[in-house]
Image (cartoon, rainbow, N blue to C red; front, side, top):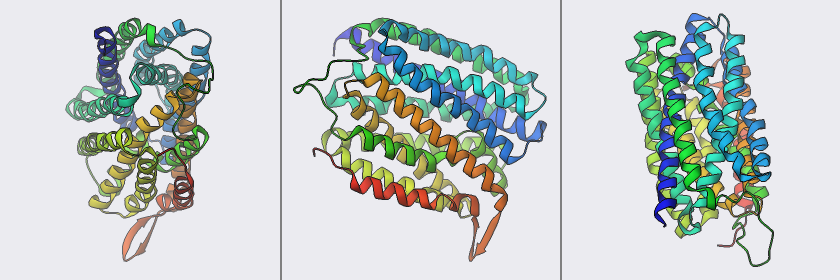
Length: 387
């Protein structure tokens, strides 16, 4: 690749690291602050988590449409990322969970503009034959930051929410500046919309089917998303806050590290077969996590994260070949966030069902995902491709 193009892609990968570091430090800090200091219920914490993804769902699609009006508007994504630095400073000022949810809505709005644009740029700027692998590296650096962000949270527990949010703000600002530099270097490769031609680049899988699978998978893996995960693991297994954050961080990191192999197979072998594999793993993940023991809970979380981390670069590769690629990538982000909202609310509403003892102790809230798991398996098996 050309030197300028390579430099821009590397900077975007770095932005995935710094931006996720900012976000991941804030997530457990806000989760335990809302639960322990503000005394919020599990349903309230679900609303806090899902208000973020609901706002992000709508602005993801809006950002894709915005880019079609002119690629210069990609810089709005970088400015939105910087806006997070000011938004997180509001959390220590809150006195109830409803205020926390309102700030989460603002964070979701800003992230919905920034991250899908970054994913679009790295996908279209990368050659097709290595697109899934480069996109996987991009997401992997985000997962590495998730691990380190959880460690930073555990190390700074004694600093209080205010001190932790200053660290988060610094990383959000840095990420915005890195994005601006990257977009300037990659500006010539940013093509949000192109004419549909018979001999042009075309998706290898049906984009509509990919969106359906993305939606179902996001519903299922919602139990690994945001504040609800930390509270569930801590309370189900009786773990300390710092230990919970550290173990969840390691689980996500290992899932991302191993997901590169699936991306490589998708590039050189079969995208369709990798979609079926990731769908199967996602489908069984909540069933495993429902069994109340440390090995099964963390195995369920690992499989959910591994499946989702593996599927994301494949879906972005497929949709980057669509003639309205910015809208398609913004759309899949929007669909996944709406589905995560639905899954997270389902988990929060059914959490009060408690447990059932059938030789082993099972969490009933996680077992309610079974119908969605069956639908995901059905849709993935029906998927047709060119390989």
